[in-house]
Each structure stands twice: as C-alpha cells, then as structure tokens.
Image (cartoon, rainbow, N blue to C red; front, side, top):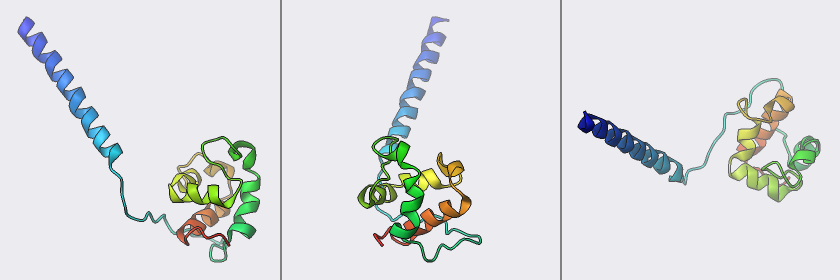
Length: 122
C-alpha cells in the first residue's frame, strides 16, 4: 500500500514538473515575426487615421488611468508607440481587451488600423 502511495505522489510530482516546464518553455519563447492584427471593418474611417488628429483625442480621455500608471502610458507618442509595438495597446482595445468596453467600436477600429498601418507619428 505504501508503494502505491509513493508511486502516486511521484507521478503527481512528475506531472507538476512536466507541466511547469512546458509552461515556462511556452512563455519564454520570443517571436521575431511581425504581429498583424485583424483589419478593422464597418462604417468607420480607418483609412485616414493619424496619431495627432485621431488618436490623441481618444487617449486624452484615458490619461487619468493611463497617465503614469495602469500598465500602459498614453500621454505621448513614444509611450503609445511602445505599447503598440509590444502588443499591449492592441490587446487592450481588441474585443476581448479590458479597455474595449470604454471605447466606441469605431475608436477601437481606428486604433487597430493605426497599429496595422505602422503606428506612425503623423
């Protein structure tokens, strides 16, 4: 009976080690490919999106939480560009993101379009 219990504990321990190894392997892998987010659709102008004219007015409403806290800073182009480059901005404004419900569908589409267009300082 003791041997069976030891075997069960050993197998449980081994499964935890294997699972932790797989998770750490997946998390540590870094992709060098460019991430392309879904192309926005709908009746919203996503072709003439600019940082200064389109995004700054949207982000001006967000700086009370995303000024110097909130995980993403949206107060200046360099900070927004960094968030666009590392995927945090797209993740936050996508339909499954935490900020999606605080934006109109058009605003979310415009932000994603700007990212897809190279996140230019225009």
